[in-house]
Amino acid sequence: MQTLKQYSDRFWYMTPVAETDRPILGAVVGDTHTLMIDAGNSEAHTNLFLDALTVQGIKRPTLVALTHWHWDHVFGLSALTDTVSIASTATKAGIERLLPYTWDDEALAERVEDGREIAFCAEAIQLEYGEDRSMRVVLPTVTFDDTITLDLGGVHVLLKHVGGDHAADAVVAYVLEEKVLFLGDALYANLYAPSWRMTPAQTLRLLEVLDQFEAEAYVWSHGQVVTRLEYEKDRDILRSLAQITIDFPGNKEKITAQYERLTGRSVDEEEQELISFFVNGSSGEA
Image (tube, rainbow, N blue to C red; front, side):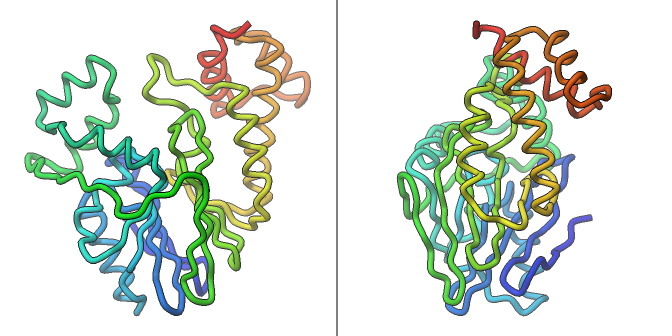
């Protein structure tokens, strides 16, 4: 069951749902504006979040920021008719590519077959929407290229286009006064590739960018809100595996052996998956 949680006076978030691919939705509460972070994967998702905010006495969002173009983060935008939507120029271009699509089972199956859609996402859309696929793709109102800072009254949010393997248009949202960094899906693997993958160079570049933020809490869109120490543990694993992969591109056995030597233990299930991603993302790199 989804619940609305309070991190601080200024930042609230709703927990995700894996089965229907509902990501975390955030709300930054200013004195003059409430900013919603990501628009939800359906109007039902969005309205659930809005209703939960109302119960807590939080003003309805007047602004919504999109972290990237993927359906689960933007399909709820049609429910936010009185809200100014903000996205990177690249995100708007990504959403524009969705405009001609239809969403019936046959169309979804065709796009999965030719690689334009992910099988998991097609299944999640079917579960989220049932037989009614009347979703309406909406374009953002305001766009920016690199960064934009929003003054919500008493609290500021910096939106920065950071890119990454998961989505080239990925944007993070940094709540300055609260020291909360909303990662979106920026650090996840590329799921649209023939094999799910992460590239070492891209990962190392992105980690360097994220290190510039003095955050105390980090929001993984399909995970949870974690402390800086918890994030740094994950960051260091990613950095170590990426650096080892550069030395042994495409070689799962050598990457695993070297990582186990460095850590003095066997790799766990999550690390095995990350190694597979890096192997897939480096097999053509020599």
